[in-house]
Image (cartoon, rainbow, N blue to C red; front, side):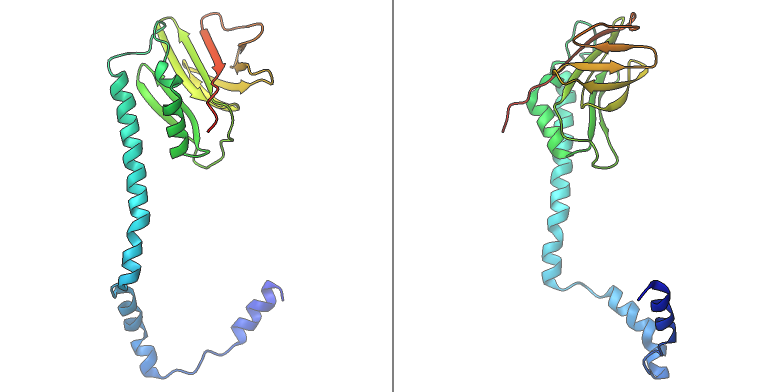
Length: 199
């Protein structure tokens, strides 16, 4: 049976016989059902999802607070190597809280930022540590291959190569951790794959 046949059948069916009293009381019946309290067994299990969300939110806030507190007063400069973003525990915790949604963890002169995808579409791969400096202003980040991000005022794509190196491409330049650099004269770039210990 296709949709049009089903639609015709449903429209031709007669409603069950009901008294006028039933139809007069029907709206009130629906309203009473909607406002009645839940049975105790449903109320008892309803707090579990809320507790899980509250716990997850508290963990995220705690981690962000720890990272920001730890790095407070230390602006990202050419002499600061962005060590918090090389901390395996920080990276693992953030990835665990937002599975397949973390596009980047960024530290720049504005502070720490978490860049998330709206959907769980970031493939699991080796984290890539990237530091880009223009003069004394630096942006350090951990990201994953294939992500297109704003770095040092430019839109860049970060890629991992088959040898374990990192490639950055922008509008007018290409940079590779292993190989020739072209068109990035005003940028000082460092990048490498972060090898997280297996669990």
